[in-house]
Length: 128
View 1: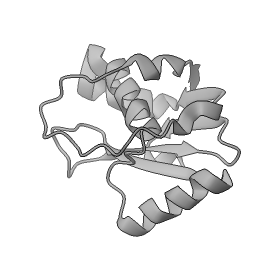
View 2: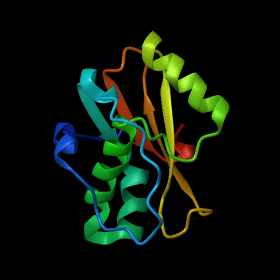
View 3: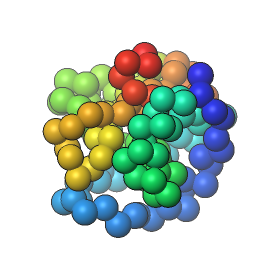
View 4: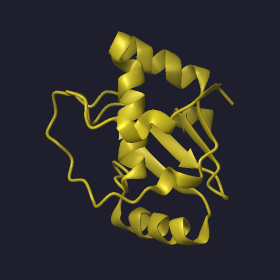
């Protein structure tokens, strides 16, 4: 697992200026309320920093905020239904976001909340 980063401050992030159409946000769900550890794998940190430079941390916080609000990014309707069930059952929940929102069809990063909902990891698909 990558560096451990405290993302409890994600709730204070209202938005960041990203040049892309705003995604539809569902009502805030507070999914991360049980989170004890928010981690980012080293390869994801490298990829994000190479795309966003000094804004990488802000984009990570934005993705955690989106995830917490119930916006799971680029997932299909079936995966959304599975996530809704998993939130209630405290099993794995997953979000998929573009590595660079200016390139929505480019590479993705994942956010995975493990069963029990205490550990949330942002990673590249190949890290899984």
